[in-house]
Length: 290
Ligand code: A3P
Image 1 (spheres, rainbow, N blue to C red):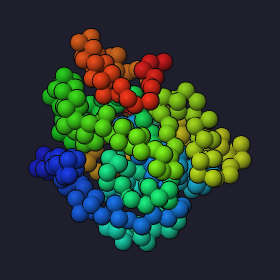
Image 2 (tube, helix red, strand yellow):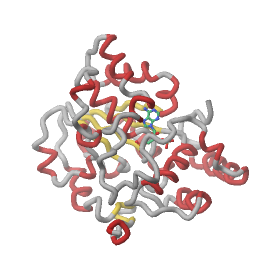
Image 3 (tube, protein in one colour):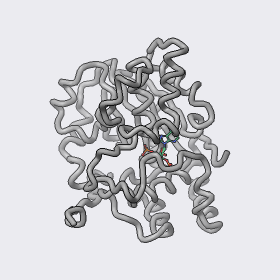
């Protein structure tokens, strides 16, 4: 079939894997020098940490919870990936407030952010669940190589041989520079626990005044159940050359602790050892189970 003839592959660019046929290294290199406006917002995630969830929440906050105003656009059209822009011109000509998501590591990001221009929201998720979610995503996404089995993927993730590279470096790279930027750190797990309060925190960080009813509407249309039934949030119209809808969905499970259904005892011990070593100087903690 036509899908099989497509050659997407990871290509290392300045130490970071880009997906050939999807990302342009030229555009990625230009991002550092993009001129930043105070009203710019960047949501940064390692893949599978809640990117689409944030696209949903932010686009709804901008329309004060009115879901009818967002329903005709894919989440990625409302809040695009900066690394998927066609050109700098597209960024320059976009009206304020420009809101983007990105999976890029800190070193690629606009230097203006360090002058406290714009705002950054970093969303982190416990990396064991990230790994499991990413395993499933590799079967679903045709631009990523389908892993032979879970064990094979576990190794790839531990080696950082995936798009996003090493999880530990991604989170440390961003979070160790937090005080240079207007920076809000949130976790997937606290969103699962209390979405309302995270939505309130985001709105207040962005300086958006919503009534309690409008905030409720944002929350209501951002629940897993409602997003699962929302074709735009699930990227259902995205063609099969990119997403194999028979093999999965963006709204897969949406829980904390699914890793327990996949990790062997040995894998878990190994993961914990690496985690303790890589995170020993990082003041972050995660919820592993609920
Ligand atoms: P699972 O595969 O564990 O279900 P990303 O958008 O960064 O690719 O992340 C996708 C992950 O976020 C998936 O995790 C998906 O189910 C989860 N997710 C997206 N929206 C969610 C929501 N409203 N509530 C809970 N989880 C959500």
